[in-house]
Amino acid sequence: MPRKGRRGYPTAILIGLDNQSANIWLIYSESLKQGKTITKNADDEKSAYKHNEEIIEAIRTLLPEGFNQLIIASTEKYTRKSGFIEYLNRSHGWLTKKLAVKELDKKAVTRTDVLKLVKMNMIQESVNEAAVETNEMIIERLEKALNGGHTIYTLRELAGVLASDKRPNLVLIAESFDAANRSSRLYQSTIQKARNMGATVSIMKPDTAAGARLEQLGGFVCVIRR
Image 1: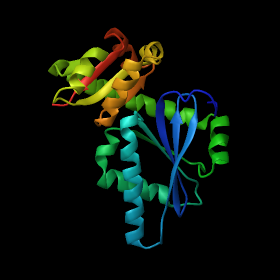
Image 2: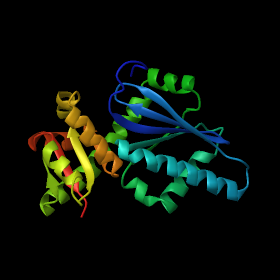
Image 3: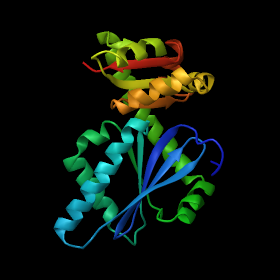
Image 4: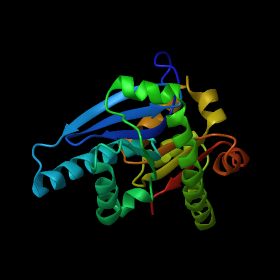
């Protein structure tokens, strides 16, 4: 996972927790980018609640970019990981239906911390584990949409939807389709407009069930919001 060069497509949101802050890292297929750091103002219950909500909001705003995995990392020295995951499951269960959530018992606060995890291949292992769950969720959503007739299969059709009163909900793109169309202005502008309208855009690898199903359908499927 090189630090420079082409960014690649979004794969996972990594959150490194310590006792006072949440350090967000954006994991792409070919790069790593530092996101925001959210600091807790105090140690009382109200501040902890506010901090958790700020983390959730930061995650929510990243969903349209196509991240479909969440990795929460901290060491035994810090106690906030289990508390945040419990809060996530209790108060924002909808997120676990959009993201496969994994825990990592390692420090991920500084860039040096995260690069060590990359070098040890620990982030990629977590991403691969989460991808299995993500794949199952996407296949379920895709097959339900296909059976209900709420899908389109071309960029031109999606451009037409964006110009109408309909809204895209989920855009699934095979890795090969993304590679073949990445330089297309129509592709870039249409996908960006879909994201701006709140659609989740996911790039799927060919060695997954969802990726293989996408290839059968031409490499591109958009689920229309009902």
